[in-house]
Length: 152
Image (cartoon, rainbow, N blue to C red; front, top):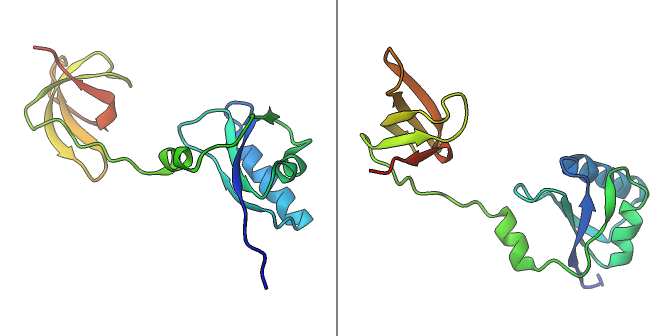
């Protein structure tokens, strides 16, 4: 009979920007040492400096991450499952723009320029804009999160 699987989520502090590298090194260590007590490795996309391990206990987390380059330590306590779900669940942003709306580009090479929405591609989360401040007709496609409505 198989033992019931008991697991908690533990946060490992790592150097910012090295999360994927650390996760791959931990995965390799788990495979080579045939460790069965680590169930998942999570690299939250919007959280910098942390890798989350689902494991049977903190001793296992310490075993698999100790001595790995860029590991800075362990966060105290457990990470709640609800927080993990918030990190990894896909959130869809409903486009708040209509064709013809005036917007301002907030990042990229056209930052600060005013534009008019020509088309919205909600499947790709992109908008096609007609840049108003150029001397010739210029249409660009930018991610929808890089534009904001112009205050009237």
